[in-house]
Length: 128
Image 1 (cartoon, one colour):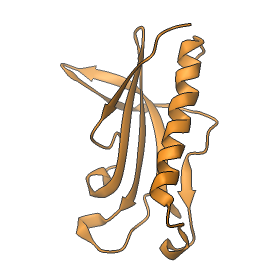
Image 2 (cartoon, helix red, strand yellow):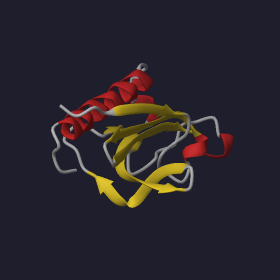
Image 3 (tube, helix red, strand yellow):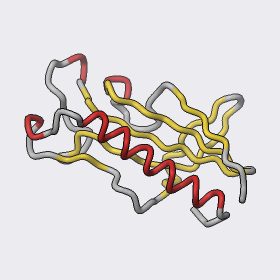
Image 4 (tube, helix red, strand yellow):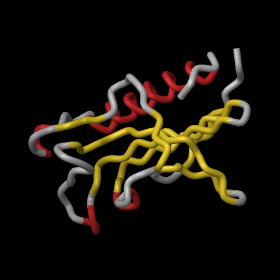
């Protein structure tokens, strides 16, 4: 089984409004020469607004994964090379009041499920 190095990083790995998201996860997975970034964003408060806004159509949280591109010392998402996965990737609601109280924990679990799925695929040498 191949070793996968996991690095937690402190910024959003996708979404142009990521800096305004109060929930951000960015996990870099490295296996041999392959690098994958799993990014989850949500709890979006554009320009400091009080109410949460969506990050996509009816989506308040979302997880995406990308092959990584290295530019000098920096490793960031290559948005042109998305990695698809089977795990749930979004938390949706018709209105913000319909979100469960524990939604941040749900988003964290969603992120962890994608990391686990992609880690297993990397360890098995499967195509991403």
